[in-house]
Length: 130
Image (tube, rainbow, N blue to C red; front, side, top):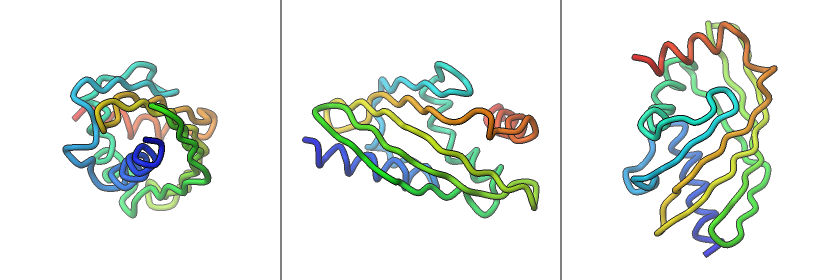
C-alpha cells in the first residue's frame, strides 16, 4: 500500500503543475492550507489553473522526500517560480496526504507564510476567485 500511495503523491505533484487527473482525488476530498485554512475541494482542484495564471513559466516543485506508511504520506517539497515578470518566489512545504480507496482523500499543505508577499497572495486569491 505504501508504494501505491507514494505513486499517488508523485501524480499529485505532476498534476499540480498542469491539472489533476480525474481519478487522483477522492470525491470527498478535504483540504487545509497554511494560507487559507480549510479549503473546499472544488477550490483546491482549481489550484493548478491558478498557478498557471500567476506563474506564466510555471511553478516548479522539487520533492526532497516522501514518507509513506499505511493510509498516510508526507512529502517535503521546495518550489520556485517567477511572477510579475521578475519577482522570484521560492518556498518550502510539507504536504500531509490521506488516502482512501486508491485516491487522495485529504491534503494538508504547510508552507512558510513569510515567503508569500502581499502582492503574490492578492494575485493568487484573485485567480482562484474567478
